[in-house]
Amino acid sequence: MANPRTTLTSRQTAAKVNRKEKTLESWRRLRRGPPFVRINNRVLYYEDDLYRWLDEHRHEPERDQ
Image 1: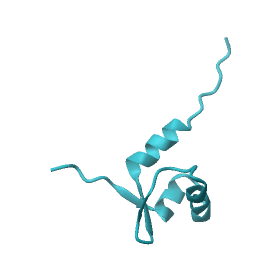
Image 2: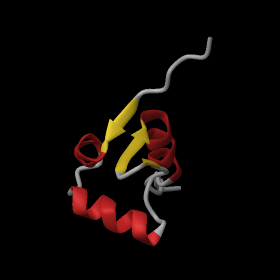
Image 3: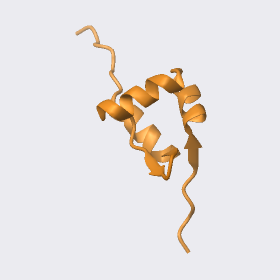
Image 4: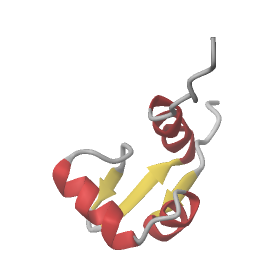
């Protein structure tokens, strides 16, 4: 049996990325935010997809050489 993936609501996801739910809604329209799943009118985010998306947008500070 496969491990169930943890899902987050838009509210939970917005809290984790410190943005408003409306921002996530805008990102969905623009296809620029984290991957999401839409089931009927409900939007869910897989927690592991969210963290992967955050990692992909991570910037390391430049180091003095």
